[in-house]
Length: 433
View (cartoon, rainbow, N blue to C red):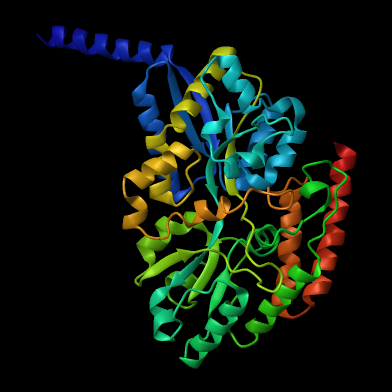
């Protein structure tokens, strides 16, 4: 009997091993840590269970910069993954990689997998298209900054409505301070929110050549009076504690979730974290705009990251990549991802499904990001940006902005310096590529 049981077990193990060996492995390097990483693992597990031809293996490689750097090094060594997640500011650098990438449009076409770009939200895909309309990478975790609001604090201070303009933001700050609450607002990912998105929000260019989309011989223009004027006004508000700086990325989240600051401008993708941490009534609203500059805002721009396909693999492997992208774009998968994380759904069908499921009624304001991105047809100034070396340039902008907050430079001087230093890196990128 023992021998027979042993033979059956061995046969089962052999069958499982054979099935595993028969499946094509698809490596997916990503930068999603913590709960987001667990969600990525969940999606991969469901995909693997849905078919037997491919096995998707997600691998966490660190933050966005670390993941992109690791993928570049791996490609040079001939050990690249099939798919790598790269944040939006790495788009120009990935495009410049030339033969290293295989555009998503080509991946889907060569594999014979049905793919229609019309199914995807225009505000999401436009950032990652070529001038001919081909899609370079597949949007994955797409977001945009919104205004997060502590409704309890605003109500206590007598602020009757959520600020829609910057004048109203500062007026609310005065009421909050009069009620004994110093910090009115803070923000995270400050270059993205206060320079890149505030420019698009007011239909202002960040740089020439349609923000870099039309050529490498671009230069920055974010040192204009509108942006520097706003940054100086924010810095002045910091002297009384109305504004509080909390870090370059998402470090300032705690300023909002603990109730220290009444309002916070950062990604819509902080929804899950805020929902689990905030012990007060909170909501999302659109970013404030300068009413003396525009009568109404234009549209915000995308952030987050996309999935890039690297060359050097077999055709059968790319068929697996195409099948996974098709699975990832399913309405039910995207709706779940959107509702769980706060990232926007990449397809119109997923947005409609979330509406049908009553998600926005049960969670008011969670469609703010989609509304902001789709507020108006994107212009050359609000489509997004495509600058080489922008990962490093963002660090320069952040450094100069910190000089503003510390009072060591005026906003105009800091942004002039950021432009000069940034333009220098643009010229190096242009020369190299």
